[in-house]
Length: 267
Image (cartoon, rainbow, N blue to C red; front, side):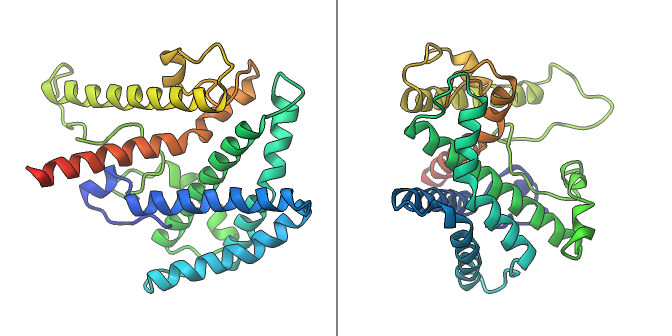
């Protein structure tokens, strides 16, 4: 699940398909396991189940990549507790912050739970990659530098976990750059295309997860990741859309690059 720390220009702009697929798989697995525990009325042991499952998942990944560094006990325990009680946290979010006291519907709960799991896993893996990249010791020494990982320039820590575009090109640098140059125009064009495709994907999700909403045909709202899984005026719930829809942004980025590679290879 860990991001590659290659410093090539392509690596700084792209999210590997294998990393994305692995994180989607474990997010779905976390959702499925807690859903089964709820059906069997033993959801109260979800934290314990996660505490057992996460280390075994790490072992399974190490068998596929023997050169990968084993995740620390602190990492496994922290991620286990977060994923183990995420089902209950999702329920509490819907009951306390939605305009409706009924909370999330079943479909909304599954979708929000999955997206939160993906966000947590991708965040944990991002910071783990940064700690390994900097050779920090696990524990408090690493925690001090978590925020620094988000401001390091690309040439220092070339990892992306939340793309804002396709990354077809980088911005030109230098004192004589023309604002209306062809390269800048192409960059703005690919950025707009990224958000338009993302908005269309969000509209599709809106029709599936929250079909009764009146915002189901508003592309501009969908492009800004507003009220996709639910409809609310609560500021906290509106802000929650951004981390929830990271999986859509990553899928958009990975999917377009897969098409580009297929097209380039077929010509």
